[in-house]
Length: 346
Ligand code: 5GP
Ligand code: MN
Image (cartoon, rainbow, N blue to C red; front, side, top):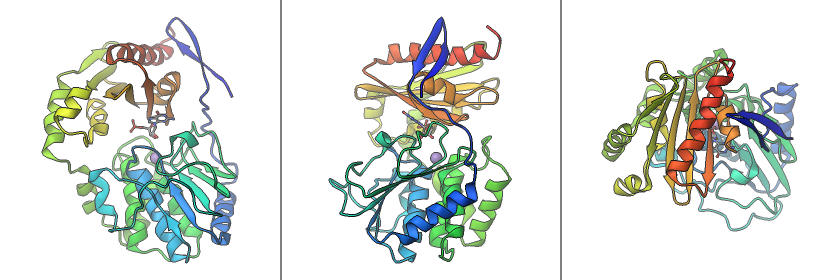
């Protein structure tokens, strides 16, 4: 499906989908997914998106453990960022797979399009399952459960585990609650609703230690805060203070260590008084990655889709290939200004 996106000075055509509608029969779809998983006799390979976040790891890890409780063979080839490594037990995650095992199901979680998966090839699966909450999900796979109204993929996994014939344990509840917490900014973002808080309560009752998870997911090495100081020096304000924009250069990333956890710097500049759209650009090899955050009624998704990326209304991102930082900043700012002006009748 093609979309026309209003851009400053004209219209740009993008190939991204934006279907923010929930499943017509969510309980029925959950049951279909639960049945497909319980009936599956071969191995199940779980995969999430590149640069896994708390929801990518939390949702896949919770489902992997639930499948193992059901007696299934489940593989999770994923490398977590350092601040999430506390969730995993030694040996629980696999190295990237060169090829999929015979007769395997590939269960893809928190991935809007299959080209964004990491750690496993997409070819050779006997069955592809797609569980996600991105409105830009293109509904790939043999069975797709896409619920854009869900705050996190881990929220869908909570509902799925509720209908699977397994008992909730702390081992399932902890990664599940972590995914919900990280995708809602620990219950502060606009995707936080009564379902989220009810699920969190259930998961705490099942043994997940909320305050400990909250503490763990916010801890960072000293270099993160030192680099944050340097990144804040790049802050620019645009559109009468409605847009905040900062960037991380490749040189800075290298100076403070490649393993930076700078993805959530955008969270800091979205709290500047008056800001409606926050933009963080990160120079990475031959590309610039942009993270976009928005307050209603503005849409981060519109900005990201105009740049060839995707995500949610409140949080989205894109990767600009083959552009230098200066060009990328101009391109991103133009898209963000178009979103601000769209609401002002320009
Ligand atoms: P972040 O800015 O934290 O990397 O991503 C915010 C949201 O946008 C996440 O849900 C993420 O999956 C999505 N997202 C980030 N970058 C891209 C991208 O390049 N393409 C697509 N389709 N989605 C992205
Ligand atoms: Mn997610």
